[in-house]
Image (cartoon, rainbow, N blue to C red; front, side):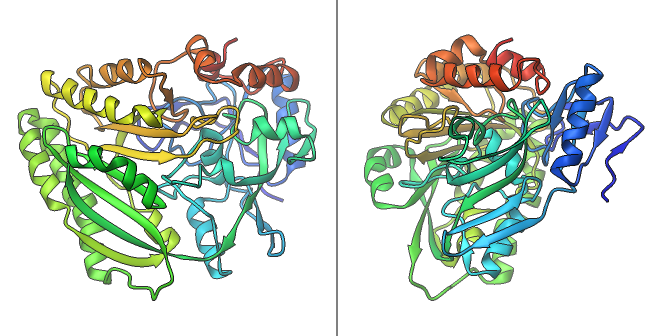
Length: 440
């Protein structure tokens, strides 16, 4: 049997290093039954319970405080692949990079992915992790069924036909409703993507944005502050043949330059902020025009080794051009020195209650700061701009919004909080972050 818990306190720190906690107890249950016992034990002791994944959120959403921390390491099994139904069922702690590779080995694939794959499947879906897509949405939108242990220790299986209301909330539930033990994703036959990366001027991107997002299945771009330059990426399905980047070229451009060299540039910019505009000008010209065709997950995802903190807001798709022009003007008239490019992605409307794309076609605008860099008001200014356009913050990325604001931008916010009152009235799964964003 898996080891259930440790007796000594273990300090937990997230990937970015900006969140930490020292829970009273950590536990890694290997079955739903063991998990239920841990939850009931914590409740009897008056302690809260929080599940943690890979720690890739920048908010304190996974912080257990002085409660019990559930770690994912023993819940990583693949429970089954149903080719006829087009589904795969995996346990909640399985990392996305393992899921992607096991699916590829079976000739299968998720429809869409984010740009990193280190998160656990439950951590990624519970916080709204997404990529970019004209027709396909977030990872949570690809869930077909799930299994969750509630505060009273009961195991519930949920789908559109079984416990449908709980399913509606728990697909993207912030860890507020219970602890997910398994997820069933919709999958499809494996496919190739052709990526075309191309430098483009800021104004040209915005002028052509409607066409670029309509013609391409997956379109995204990065704007380099202090410049008028962007790097665009178009991913579209291909009949092949596969033509991946040569191994050395891929390592040089996507690992050495994008991680090792970029890390050094970020350190220089952190120590000498005045150098950042020059670094941005050089970096914006380092992105060349290139195309390649490869297995979907190799095109969707990239290694991200440079550590940073991030804020991301979803704004209505129709407002993105105005918002980006305002953001560019804001940077130009400020004293900020912004070393990281601004990332822009897209998603269609979905029906998940707490999805940032709930009920509206959305554009995502993400801003970053290298770890240890002084903010100097950048995130505050960006957040003010985003909220002026009814922006919805990514649940796992830095923001200061509370339940009062969020209730006004999510049509089904009240449905979610009412469900939470039913399944966790004592707030066994609560923490400071959830008290702020969902209310007491």
